[in-house]
Length: 146
Image 1 (cartoon, rainbow, N blue to C red):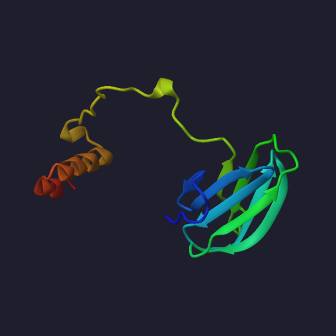
Image 2 (image 1 turned 90 degrees about the horizontal axis):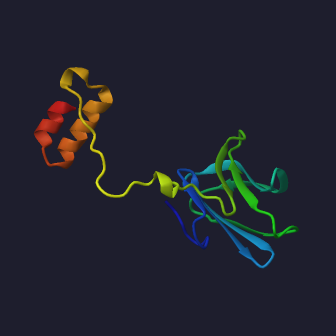
């Protein structure tokens, strides 16, 4: 995954990596894409109002960057990358990140998955069993399970 010359990572997915950074009253945007995106649309929004749009042919070999003076520095801005059909490939709003709340994190010993009897196993159960056998170095039993 290319992450170069953009100063950090604010959001990453299979389509690319974007970094949003503020320098004084300027939003500095850096983007590396993971695959060519012809006729891409790069947008910046203040809430739901679009304040910047640029069409670009993006490729992993080149970094896309832009500096955008901010009229309302107290607002949170959103970056959006769309393909030529308008599908959103990558979106990030300043200061918003995916995370698991502390109340949902359970430390200590974890509950082990109980494998059902062979006659009640789903396809996923068989794949999980084969994977566990393979990771444990039991290659021939894993092959038979798969």
